[in-house]
Structures are given as structure tokens and as C-alpha cells.
Length: 233
Image (cartoon, rainbow, N blue to C red; front, side):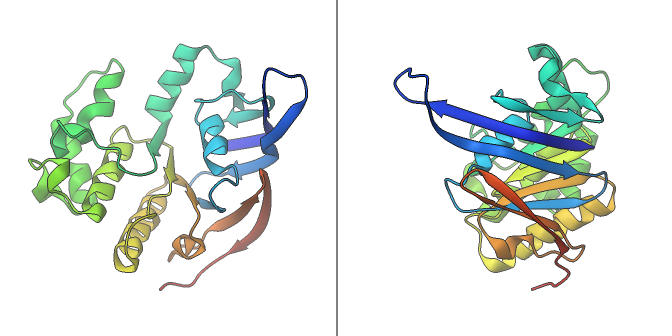
């Protein structure tokens, strides 16, 4: 489904011609339909830069990002935006809910970012039920715990029935019990046929009941361990 080949992002200082450093350096990465892939690395290793290129938010210096065989960086900006809104579900790092919208409206929001027909409220409530917080539909983000807010962000990422869910540090500031609950939700999503790309600095967060193919990122380079972790906490 998703394939990055030779993906590189160079940065230069002071307008000079010499490359100061590569935030991402020749990365190859694949995600197949219905699998969970984890990228583990410390802060500053290049994970967020990689995600921004994979989701069409940051143009790479070199390399390609293929989705179903098509290079997304060959598309116009409007086409990338449409693809991101229809095919990709994205859970950004940290608090991403809009404080002035209640839980239901936060979940419904991506539906209205592109022209669509149909009724969305029932679908949004179904997604909230899927992540176990339908009873919080009328609450606002300030009234939620950290784990509840992550569940809302997950429901929002799933609202347009994406083929690929990308999650950036989805358990970064959660306790172990809540981390396990969120990871079980990811396992259920994979079981329903949606691929998941999980990026985290916590190696323990990738341990899920379904197993995960794991990549490790260091200094902008990616190394695939190509083995599945089958344990649970």
C-alpha cells in the first residue's frame, strides 16, 4: 500500500550550498494492507520529518513516496490534500483536539474538510463507540483525561474510513495501563483491515497482541528488524 524508496530530506544552513545534515537519509519503508508497522527512535532521530514526507506535508529532497503504486509527490497540492483526507487517518503528536469544539464535533471535523454527501453524525457516534467513549460525545477536550483525548483523536482519524492510519507518538504521555488499552485498539483496527503505521520513542509501545514489524530509526537512517513481537504486557 505505502512504499518509501530512498527518501531523503537535506537541510542547509545560512543559504549555503553545502548540506549541513540529513534529517532523513535514504529511507526505504513499506506498509502492506492490514498490517501494523512500528518505527521506533529517540527524539531527534528523524521520525517526525519522515512522517511529514510520508503524509505529503513536507517535500523530500530525494526519493519517492508511493501509495498503491503512485508517487504522491507527482500530484498537485489539491490532489495530495484530497488523498490525505480520504485515504489517510492521522493522529498527530500531543494534544490535537480543538478546544472550542465538543468531542462529537472534533470527530466530525475531517468529514467537512472535503466535499462529501451523506450524514456524518451517526458515523461519528459509531467511531466513538468503537473506541469506548460514546458517552463523552457532548464533553469538551478540557474535561477529558489524557487517554480519553487520545481515543477522540483516534476516532477522528478513522472517521473517513482510511486505508492507512498513521499515529505519531500516540502513547507518549500515557501510563502503562492506558498505553495497553490504546494498543489494543490499534490491534482491533488492523484486524478490521486498516493498515497502521505507528511512530514512537517507546519500544514497549509497539508490543501488541497482533505483532508488529519494527523499524528502528537513528540519525535519519532506518533499519528494519523484520521480526514480529508477539508478547503482551
